[in-house]
Length: 285
Image 1 (cartoon, rainbow, N blue to C red):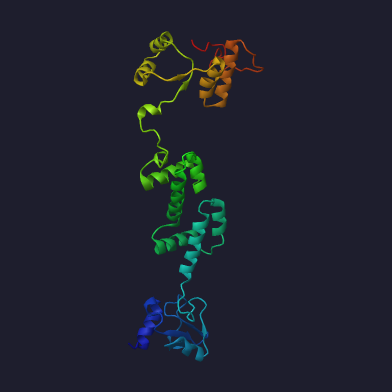
Image 2 (image 1 turned 90 degrees about the vertical axis):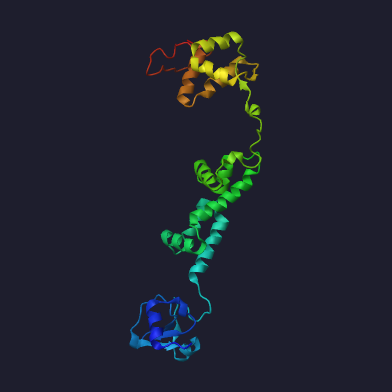
């Protein structure tokens, strides 16, 4: 089908890519010929010359445009750029610093890159990176002795919370329940030995009378498997001081233990600011 000059000019004005390969147009004032879909500035109609083939434009003394490259059979710079970026994601998705350094050399803004990537692959770059990281995380979760935190960091997640959120969105489950990590099939096997004093029935009844909530908790738990440490002092340190969250609170409890047990007196023991007699208050009042 032969195109008229009017149809060709209309295709040039609208940058219609459907006419690529059917004809070319050259600008007499610049000596450059382009494809109909070229995004260059629209020239004046009286300065345009149409060619059916690129050879005719060369014979006319025209040179190819460096933007649309009409001298090449297939020219898709956006697709080549996205393929390069996708290869960078595939290689460095687990190393955030290296990935950021590689993307700095890409001559595209993050917003434009996101739009182009979504048009080409149907997902944003972040979604594609998370898919790669989750695939690697699932492979690492199959290793029973590998901590979940190490799995998240090795896979490229910035934090454990982001790993949990991304994992839950994709599989609607917890990473600890994946692979061989859910070892406890029987709820009775979940109970762990409690390293504490071997309380007798008298001590337990005394604790129940002092705290009703504790009594309800003891009744709901039932018999507890206890591991009795040979050194009661070590058990006391492990059970009381080790449960303190803040270091300052642990230091305060340590000072109280030394005062109550008659051990080495701390060189500098400061009482609690809220109560002056805190340091001398008995442990089990």
